[in-house]
Amino acid sequence: MRSKTADDLEDAGSDEVIALHPAESGMQLGRALLHALHNAGISVLYQDREMKTVWARNMRAPWASDSSDGNGILPMAQADRISAAKRDVVATGNPERLEISVPVENGVRWFQIWVDADRSETGDVQGVVTTMVETTEQKRREQTLTTLLREVSHRSKNLLAIIQSIATQTGRYSDGIGDFLTRFRGRLQSLASSQDLVTSSNWRGAALHELVTSQVGRYGANISHSLRFRGANPYLNPNAALHIGLAMHELAVNSVSFGALSRPDGYVEVTANLNTAATGEVALSLTWAETIGNNGGRSEKRFGSVALERVVPASLSGTASLDIADGHLEYRLVVPHNNFESQ
Image 1 (spheres, rainbow, N blue to C red):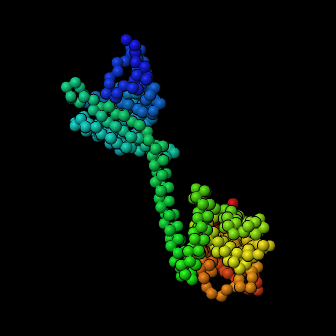
Image 2: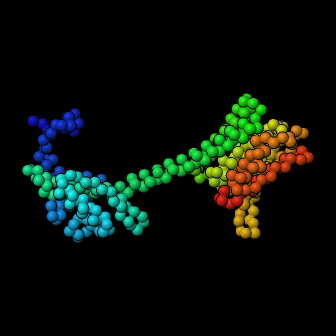
Image 3: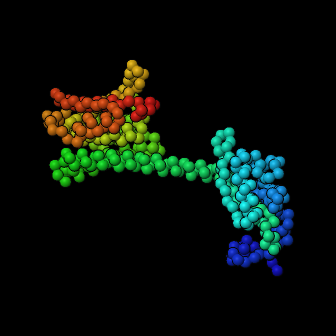
């Protein structure tokens, strides 16, 4: 009779018992299992009812030691938990499962431990089999994922609050549903553009130059001509990126309608300076300057000016001013250093 091949074993049902070839028994099988334990990072310990070690395989730190209880060099509290679980298994025959943490020099190592009863042919518990598997990397991934999910939840709530504020203020200063939808969609698109920059940086934020370029570029046909950016290029945190992006959007929309960007040869100047106060605190001073048309200085308050003078600076704990006079518009925003990193 031929020996069964790998294909035969794969085709066989899970309930079929395959007789081992003589070459697959004994010491060869034992060596193969030892290789499997080593490669999988699994430690196995067998003890009798009195917790005397009968045999152990692949016992690495912290399990490897001369201790008779098989608990290695674990902290006392963890060793007591494992010993108590083994005694329970001997007494009841029911398996136990534990998760333990072991402090090390560079952090914490985590392990999953299974304790199973070894029964005799009569069903009596004659020993316990303890299996230890390190799960440190899995635990770190879980903790990282949990942290990221909390961060996403926090930022999502902040983003929804900004959207709610934009919707409320846009509705307050709109002349009807059509006007509201046009303005609200533009502001949402502006927010989405800034959010894309924040997301692509793994939530770190956005560089000021890139942020200003992305917002003005949505309205200027030739961004290299329509925008003249000078000065520093700090890296804004996510909150600052979203609100400064909104300010740039409002200024760009106004410029396309009434200012420099409404003319083929027009351009806007954006200047960023990092100024150090007497207290040693560094602040970002951001200035938008352009020439405007005759109706660029509309007197009525609309959401654009409210956002520029109140909403944006308040959200950044900064100050702002909007001056429109003599055919010139200048917006100056000053924000403290906790909103950005100096590159």
